[in-house]
Length: 166
Image (cartoon, rainbow, N blue to C red):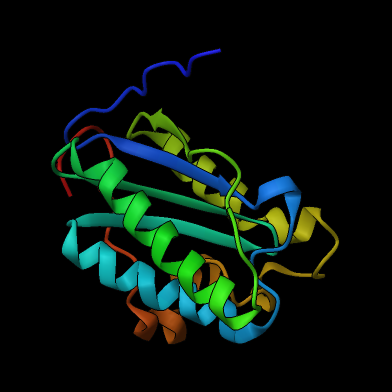
């Protein structure tokens, strides 16, 4: 069965999801989350990806962002996930695929739904009973978006709504 064509547009807002192969954990220790975020920063700069929200769960990743040139979306995700896979497989002496299939991408309208989507992904750890309050989870954009003290992380770009570029 062939895969459907991916909808990719210049300057569109996307909800990107990538899952561990067979629902396996892709982050075992805190350093693994840190390594993924380090690579996210690197490829965010390289491919001019604007990041508006994220949540790294033990077995999957959510990113909300936009990319200037549509042909760079797949390259951005491929570079990010391949780089992290090499790190993970080397560290844990694994071979084979870390990620399940290709990443999922959903186009999001830059309106209130974008904020709702960011809120939704940031609350994943709460819904999974991993934490009591979203402030406790350090692997999402929640604190950076909601606490002035955490804005020094500087992972996020400013989201402007109503279709205007940010």
